[in-house]
Length: 175
Image (cartoon, rainbow, N blue to C red; front, top):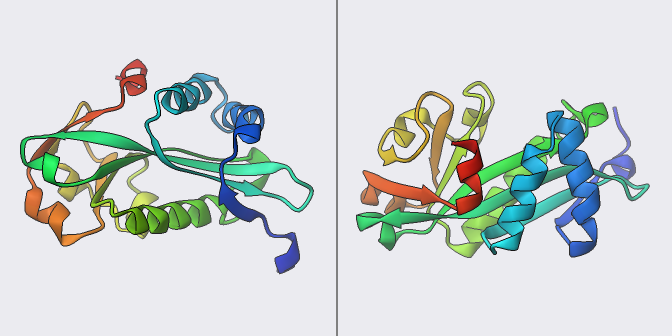
């Protein structure tokens, strides 16, 4: 069992964290595409929430970002976010850091009044947070399939479905 004092502290991203987050993303994904995505999302003001996990030694060992998604038609009545990316330092993966970051981020989004959260990720991982591929099938987006999942944070989200959405421009590099 780990000692609670040695657990990472979760806190909002600060501009001084940018370089460490980019390094973390490169290490976690084995490429720099996600680091460029985060940089570009931050640059265009698309982030609604960014959190980091910091070890007691000050090293950033985890990151999650949630960006604004634009809805068309009935979707204009609801607030929509996208979870992407989430990353944990390779030496700290499978330790609960990613899960803690996602749960803290979803809580923050709920407090902000976000209605719906979308994610493109492993269907075996995200349902533990309430994400559902079936719900996402009611969202017309550049993404589809079992990896595209949705989580309704409010009843208004389900009431607005089906909807069409557009992700922030930096995501176009991944389409």
